[in-house]
Structure formats: structure tokens, C-alpha cells
Image (cartoon, rainbow, N blue to C red; front, side):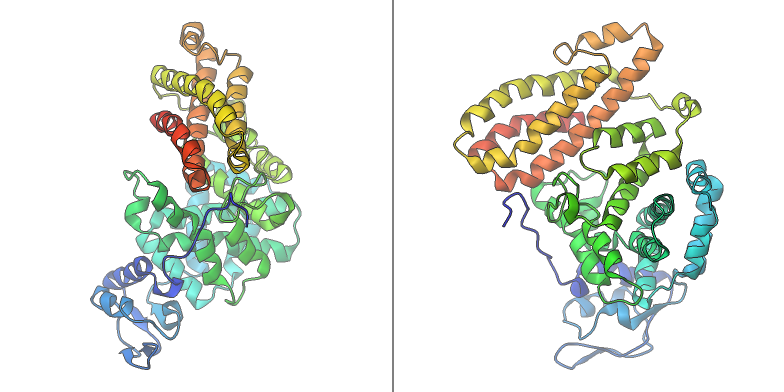
Length: 431
């Protein structure tokens, strides 16, 4: 077994997850969710009769017993997500969000996505899950549609066969089904995720894969894309730390689409480009190039950059990180030399810190003299703009690195873990 792969297990069988069942019953509080079949407990006892309305009053009954069949297969919502409602949501995105209009236009066939959505065949279980997502996790629902738009456009640009385009569309729509099984309190924006809690996030691709396997319309390409959409070519992803050719073509496309969508919502397009340039060892080059072509970043995008972050504090935090790393690097090389497992597990750390230093150098600054950056850039608007953009990217890299250290920490010796604690604290200050 690869020691760098975290020990990830499902906390509950997908059909018995209380977080998802609570969301289903809460949807039933605001629209009719009806059992279209009798619901039985595994010992044969009837829990809910056919035709009964499902709402929060049934939460305890549904979670205290093991069901004979998946709950999704026995319920129908009055106002479900279907092909028509997906097209309406897509039209709304195209109308109000210029970047997605641009992406579709540059595919050469901007109507293909709408036609594909209009004809998509959704299994009843998928319709119910999308409905629960729309009603209880609206941001996640819109993320899924935007990700599907980008993924389908990439498939067009890459000239993937029609069969694979259909698979990536369905896989992208459903790629975060597993996230609805995660405790909402862990995912709250104000919550600081602990190392132990992070494993519940890392398991969501496995949950999603299990949920869609065997459902009508799901090819093996689609299910594998869901399972692997957080894998990275350099082995830094999850849940299985796959590398290179072990990751399927559609999973590579979905990985780029997923990250691009999240970045587009948070950043300007120049920073999206920078993100993928920094992650060139992690993402498929052909897919990233197709994304660049679809985004077609212009000088107007450059003028639209958001530069409101406090550059002084960012410089100070980055200087502290680099100073800590100089000491830590020597310590790790000296003290982990006998521990081959640590040396292998820490390779990612040396690579990521080298990337951060390289970014500073590429921007024309000296990583050994961070304090001088603001002095040099203060009277030069163009240089200050470049500095702030670089600092924002360093902040993103710091956050990503902190999560990676948390994820791999259980595979390290106590000595290596202790050595990393100070660096981890500095990285968290930047995020």
C-alpha cells in the first residue's frame, strides 16, 4: 500500500448517511417529497407507506433503521430538477455571466451545451439528488452546472467523441454528490477545518462514485471521472494519490473544469491563468491549453483585476514563511535522512516551496529580501499591480500547501510532524 495515500473510509454507508437524509427531509418541509414505494427496514418492518409525505418528522425513523433499498430510489419530489430546469439554469448563467458566454462562444458551437442538457437522461435518483442540492446547497448546485459547462466546452475543444461528451456532462453535474454527505458544519466558511475533519472531505469522491455506480446513463468513464476528479498528475491529489496515466482522460478534464470554475468565481482571469501555470505539473497540459483558448484572456481582463488586498501584511507573512523554511529545510534534510518514508512523503514540500520561490523570482523580486518589495513597487503602479497579483497567488499556494501538509501528516514520523508545526502555523497566517 502507498504510505502517502491517506486512510480514507466512509463514515456511513451512502444510503444511511444522516447528513444527506436530514437534507432530504428538510426539502420535504418546503415541497412535497413523496414515497412512491413502501419503505422497509432490513428485518422486513415497514417504516413508511407508499404515498406518505417525507419531511423532518421522519428523520429519526429513517436514520435509526437500515433500509432495504436506497432512499433515493423510493422518493419523488413535486418540483424536481430535470432536463428543462437545468436548461433554464444554464440560460440564466449565460445571460448574466460574461465569462461563460465567452467560453461557449469560443467552442465554435455555443448551442451544443444547451442541446446536450435538454436531451440528458436523468435517472430518478439523480433528479432527487440534484433537487436536494438545489434546495439545500444552492451554491454547490450552481457550481455543478458551471463546472459541467466548462467540462463540456473543454470536451468540444479537445474534439472528444460524442459519447465522451455525454459522459463528462453527466459526470460533471454529479461530481460533488458525495459532498452532500459531509457534515455542513465542517464546510461552513467560518469553520477552521481540523486535520481529522479533512478526511471527511477527502472521501467525497468515493461516496459520489458509489452513489452513481449502476445507475442508468452512467458509463464507466463518467463514474471514474467522479472518483478521480481530485487526483493530480504529480500524485498530490486524493483519494488515491494516483499519478499520470493512472488518471482517466475525462477525470483530467473534470479536474481542470472543477478548479477553473472555483477560481473564476473567486479571482480575475489573469489569476486563473497564473493558478494553472503554477500547477503545470498537476494538470493535463492539453486540457489547460484548451481552457486558455476558451477563456481568451485580453488586456481588458487585465484592467479589471481586483487589487484590494493588504500587500504589506501579505509581504510580512510571506517573509516569515520563507525565513521559517530556510531553518526547517536544513533541519528536515538532517533529521529525516534515516527515515526514507519521511523523505519520500516530504518531496512535495520541497517542490512546493521551490515553486513559491520561483514565482517571486519570475515576478522580478528577490525572495531573500521580501521587505524591499513594497519600497521598490510603491511608486510604480504597474509593478505594484504585479506584486499584488503575485502575493495573491502565493496566498493561494500557501493555503494549498497547508492542506497538503495536514493531509499527509499521518504518514510522517512524530519528529517530522513536530518540525512542520511551526511552518504550518505561518502558512495558516497567510490564508
